[in-house]
Amino acid sequence: MALIEAVELTKKYGDLTAVDRVNFKVRQGEILGFLGPNGAGKTTTINMLTGLAAVTSGSVRYDGVDYTGRLKKAQHLFGVIPDESNLYDELNGFENLCFCGALYGMTKADRRERARELLERFDLAGAADRPFRSYSKGMKRKLTLAAGIIHRPPILFMDEPTTGVDVDSARGIRDLIGRLNKNGTTVFLTTHYIEEAERLCHRVAFIVSGRIVRVGTLSELMREVQQENILLFTFEKNVDSKELSKAFGKRFSRYSVYPGNRNSLSVHSGEAVELTPFVKFFEENGVKVYEAKIIRPSLEEVFVNITGVAAEQMRREKEGKKPGEKRP
Image 1 (cartoon, rainbow, N blue to C red):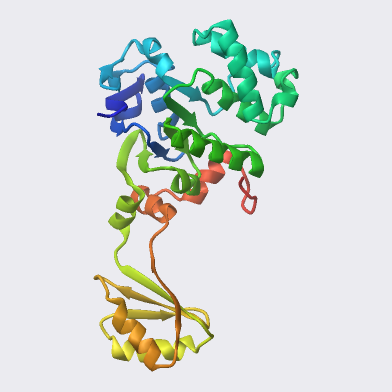
Image 2: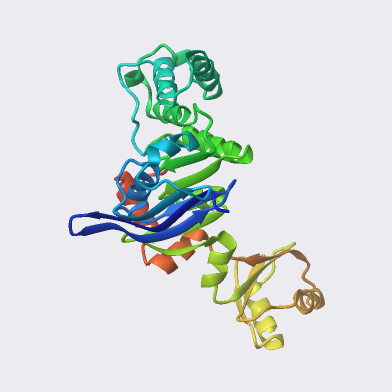
């Protein structure tokens, strides 16, 4: 049974349909990545799943129970990490965590102990008494994450968790997501970083203009768009790859072969290929194969192919960056 389930989930603002009959399931213990361009409906979907936005139609279910219209009763089941911090500038780190714990009904002793534990885990103990407004972006992001898990929820909703933070903070947040998941936390993650989803997620859903256009594991999505099998051969020593490619093409005319640098070439085929004849050919030509591997499309290529949206453009628009600037 799915731990999270959206059934025909729809959100309208007057004549505007922000989310249009969305259906998906999130299994217990998995990380589902929710990818799409700005305005696609990612944050609106999270808001409906967590009770921050009213559902126009459809239903939200947790562990098979329909909580539509009464999501406050399900708040103990999930933590929410919004794309913008929802903590209080005038409170210090410790006070913010204790306040969030109180909202979840934790006892005073439990929330104080848990707050100290999380401040240590997130390397924020030295800033526990400082007002939140004085924190750096990375520190604010980490404390916001700590606040979302203070009540030890089995489900975590994360909306663009690494946007706008430095490289080290982004790496630390991704590592934490991985550790939480290994310990059993189910994660619903929106991100505009394709490589982040590729690194963290078990399955990915693509949403465009309020509608989910595809859901699947990384291997399923990649197989769907890969039109041919590609083998890359790397050789132990430099060779004349152009001449080797010509000889290869004469022997194996049914395949397309492309020279790489001076120690590699790639073979393209519309069908499954057998490695042994290729390796034998190279040996006959005095070339030792150092490595032979299958080349698969990246998730970015899959995203562009399925959605028609340029991943780089999506990221730039989200961050408001100019071409040439680096991401965390």
